[in-house]
Image (cartoon, rainbow, N blue to C red; front, top):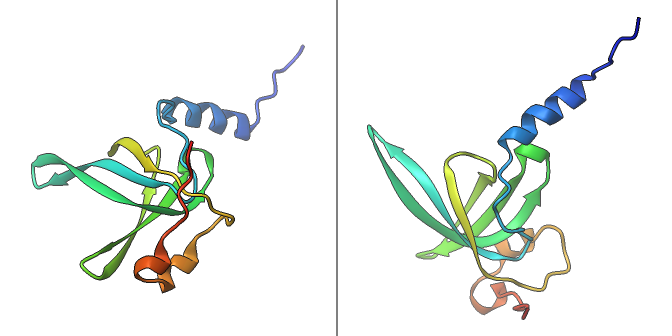
Length: 122
């Protein structure tokens, strides 16, 4: 009698793959992106746009997150988004930058022209 051995990791991998979004572009650190997010207010739903530079990316399968930063009215706003969340409708990469680091946390301490990144021309 032969038994088929199925590990917990393979079951989790199968379940996670069914929920992964496959139609998104590849997002890298240093990209300036625009996100469309589904926001629920009471019993109404609306789409909200959010823009920012990708400071960090954490690759973890279905739990992949990106951290974006944008200075709005003199205040730096950072948000962490789950890429494969059903609340995120779409991504749009507006600009790409040439970066030499995996995390761009040093941009938190910079203002104005010092916070600019060198644009990458495709």
